[in-house]
Image (tube, rainbow, N blue to C red; front, side, top):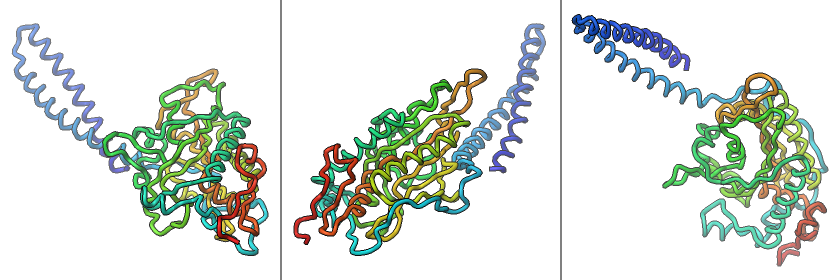
Length: 389
């Protein structure tokens, strides 16, 4: 990148000097013609300058293109309090470590049909059936109600977006191998509604007194899971299609750190209400991805694996996304400044269902559903699969 910048700095002054010389030559030609004098020498000089200008213009265009491609791959600057390595911040809830722990497929039985999903669409697809469908909709509606109470506006965004939306959020160029692209259209399937929510105010100047703007987006999400061959192949932990309720916030530089902690607190409160044991991890700098300056993961305890697995995450992307998407905030006085954006998972439906099934399992193979979800239409207890004692 430094070499490209040096090349640009070498070309630009020469090009500017040459253009100034062209202007002077043009003036001399005009004066000579007005005076009836011979302008052939000045015209020849103008032609030579024009040829050299074309050469330098081409060089500058090539250098600028290469420089922009290189700059586009630079990640956000990590926050000073981002962790040098994954660091457990706290552990919450009583872990189920004794006795037989069935996994989510054993507990769900025919309600998670991986075989039918594979016949229809290939590996890492599934049919959800019966009470698990009711559980999904209960989770989504309950989460939206909770987020509305926290000042979030519910949104159902498009799941097909243009390339600029993925570039603006830092998913391109960074995670091309994970993104589904339509063959006949310049559109991509989103891996998270964060992509669409971030572009809700692209190119806009937001009044600072109206910030923060908080949105709760629900969408289906699509991920190719390239490079995940042989990893989490059993069940619905790592699939190509899943549903999610996502939090997204537009705010100011002064408030983004506090807003990050607020989003984390909401995630933790949801897990607590669902009686899912979890731990909070401050994610290592080298695993932040392109856009995040700081990220927390909430990892749920899965009894069948006897370990914590990632369930939700929340990131402060500071001004990285807003700069790319040209989103600014106008203070009461002064010029507009680049806004800050944040995102966080409220409910990743598939993985939350896994955690609910495994942590709510009873000795007879049935599953107790958290009381907070029952008013939303899911049974208080999901019966054990037929044929299980």
